[in-house]
Every structure is written in structure tokens, then in C-alpha cells.
Length: 288
Image 1: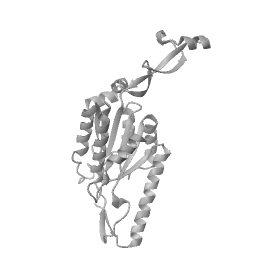
Image 2: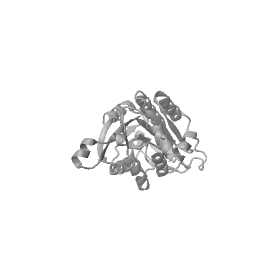
Image 3: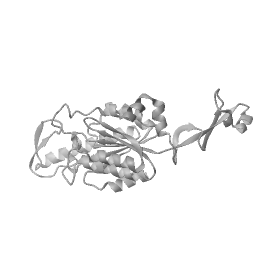
Image 4: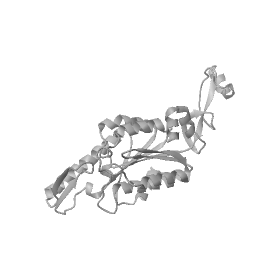
């Protein structure tokens, strides 16, 4: 937590923490090894970086600019809100989110990636980046920790998604890889500006975790449905074909709208069921 406050209070400290040596191309320009461009000389530039050939050709002083190498960074956001604590087969959606996060973390540890995360829940927790296996273990342990109880509506209140995204944008070094794991049921138009800004400055990927019953109702007769964040309850007769058809149509429409929102900001949304094996999806993400 001390490191997080230091990062927020001093941008140059936050930036230096992430500008470490590595094998990946950085968004920062400086005096690294890979030549990026030649630009006109400006007062204060180091004359040792003069590009004499360009200077002679253009009759104007130019400086060589190089792209620094940087350490790759991965930040995983795990939604542990009320709607994620649902499941009808094998496991809860929040458990699947933890499995995905752990797989991502340990998969990136071998490249000496700086791995951090955000646990989005009542009392959101931010995990500072750590290198390699230490960062992956920190992420996995936080992901599998017990969820806060939802009995108290005030204590169970989730911080706004847009606010979370803005905090991430301020915290992370430019060019970080950010993976959002959620069912995105709460995503709305008001979140788009913050999500768009995050995607414009970082490599954002989105994984939607759903339960099979959220896509199509099984025929199990009269069933009570309750909102996890409130005592509100309703009954549905799943034995009626028209009820199941209306439910499936609404689910398909909702998913299509979420896909469209992400497409508008250039972020690919990939869906994974809670009872599915995450490894194939994560392999696909690495290849895409």
C-alpha cells in the first residue's frame, strides 16, 4: 500500500518503477538500443546523440532517438461482485475468474513479467507489481481468498467501474497489458470514456465469464430467482417454452450489446463458461 501511495503521489517515481530492462519494446523514447527516429535538435539535447548524416543532408541539426527496452507488465482485474458469485455447474463464476487469473499470471512469470492485479469487490484491493513467480503467486493468492460477505448492502457496495478504470490508467505504466475478467453485467455507456482512455494507452483484453444458465434456462419447472445484491426475488416457470425462449432471446441481445460496446473501443471480448477449461482460451489469446 505504501508503494501505491508513492506511485500516486509522484508520477516520476511511478514511471521509474516500470521502466526496467527487458526484452519488449517500450512506449518510452530515450537512449536505448533500438533506433527509432531522427528529430530536429532542441536546446538541452545531448550533443553526443547528434545524427550527423541527417544534419548534413537537411542542413539542420538532428538528434538520434532510440526506443528503450522495458520490462513487460501484466495487470489482471478480477470482478468479485455479487453477480460473479453465481454458478450452476462445477463452480462459481468468481472461481473461474480466479483460475483464469492464476493461469495468466504463472504463464507470464517465465518472461520476468512485472505482474500485478486489482481485486474489484467491496473494499477493492490493488496488488503492486512484482516480478515473475512472486507476482504470479501474489495474484493467485488474492484471487482465491474468500469473498467479502454480501449480507450488509452498504458494505457490499461495489466502487463504480469507470472510477476503477481511471485509477488503473493513473497507476500503470503506459503500454501495460491489462486483462479484465468479469461477467460485465454492470457495464454501461457511462463506462465507455474511461474504458476508451485505458484502451488507448494500454493493451486491454476482456474475458467475459458466464454460467450456462445465463445463456439458456433449463426446463426444471417453477424456479425462484434472487438478486445477489438485494432480497428481491421472482419466480419463473421454466417448464413453459415461451418463457425459456424469451429468456434466451434477452440473454443473446444483452451479449450482443456488450460485444458491440467493446468493438467500438477496439477491445476484443472473449467469452468463457464457468465450467469450461480456461487453457484453450488463454492459448488463443497468446496467439491472437
